[in-house]
Each structure stands twice: as C-alpha cells, then as structure tokens.
Length: 268
Image 1 (cartoon, rainbow, N blue to C red):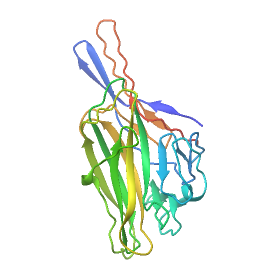
Image 2: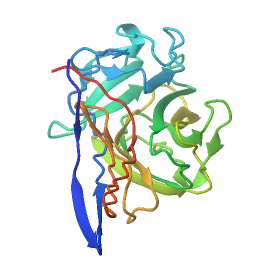
Image 3: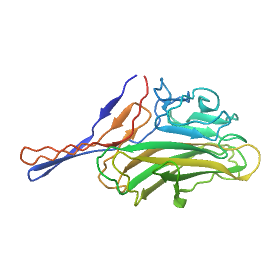
Image 4: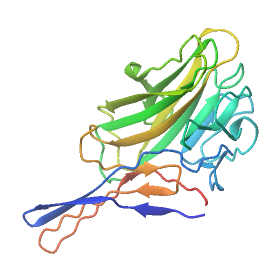
C-alpha cells in the first residue's frame, strides 16, 4: 500500500514574492473495482475514512468501517445488473465510477457521503464543487440523486439547482449517458481543521418495478469559483492527494500553508 502527494504548480513572480498554487485532480475512481470500503483499503477498494454509504439492506456503515462484502461490494459491471448494492460501473472505455443499483431495500433512500478536511490553516468561505452523474436508463422508473452539504454531518443544506432525476421511460437500447453538475457553495465558512461533508442522496420518484443504475464520477472540490486559483485537490481512486503550498519569499522569511485536501489510500 502506498500514498503520495503531487504538487502541480504555477509560479507567479510579484516583486520579491513567489506564489505557488497547486492544481486540482478530480476524483475519477480509476482503480476502483467495486470490492468494498476499508480504512486501510486493499487494491480496488475505497477508503472508508473519507467515504460512507448508507441505505443498504446489509446494514449501517460509519466512517472508518470495513465493508467488503454483500451490498457494499457488488464488484464491477458495465450495466444491466439486477442485484441491489454498490458497484464499480464501467461507463465506457474503461472509465470506472462509483455507482449503485437501487432496489426495494437498497438506496431508496440511501446516500454516498464524502468527507473533506480543511488543512489550509485558515477559514474557507466558499467552495466550488463539480461532478458528473452517469445513468443506465434500462427501466421504466425514475429515481433521484440529489446533492447536499454539511459542516457537522448532522444538518445538511440542500442545493435544489443540482437535483437530478433519471428518466421515467427506459431507453431502447439502454446506454450510459451523463450530466454535469457544478456550483459554488457560498458562506460555508469552513474552519481550519474542520470537515466538509458532500452527500449524494438517492430515492424513488415515480414508476414501479426495477430501477435504473446510476453513478457519480469526476468529483472536484476547491476554494472559490470554477475559474479561481485553487487551493484544493484530490484523487480518491489512485492513491494521489494534492496539497497546496504557498511560499511567500519576503526577505528571508518563508510561510508555508497546508493544502485543502482529503486523505486517500489505495493499494496497487
């Protein structure tokens, strides 16, 4: 098992100061094979210190739990499954995602929650969030996958503009399709050392019978707007975590600020 940090930097010369900013690497779930969650994950698993899944018939999951069987580890698929639970869906060309097949007692309702730590040493006012939703619309039933966020993992703020519902009529033939979602969370005021929780909640909306598969991918969270210089970066699927270093060289003094990052471990 290994973990590394990558700094992707741009240097800007301003008089006697050099400012170095890190760039983000979205969470794209490369290497995830649907074999579950663990605090010290084996190859193909996700880190349960930062990921949690609820609403499955095989029981509750907390951050830091080990869940490597049953509904939490349904393996890999290209779609068209019928057993409820968490999958690594290949949506085409080897692009793996974090997905779920909802069922009568699985993910209706249920949610994926991502836990991010602010290690900048400063309060973060606004956070830009973007992600992709993939849907395999093979059933005549509509299901939602809606976003919310929290600072305490108890009280969540919904963002209605990001709400998503799968089509109520199946495609013939079905194929994976995607939609992008993004927003700037304003007034977050995430304190230094605090945690930001991003949640995607699924539930039934209309129709009857079996349900579509869906998945999330390419998750990005960073300080400021979509074009702002970023302090944040993470790749929760390939062992990479980025951190920000701002080096202010004024005379002989150097100030180092930690990155806004989340821990990720995955074995190869």
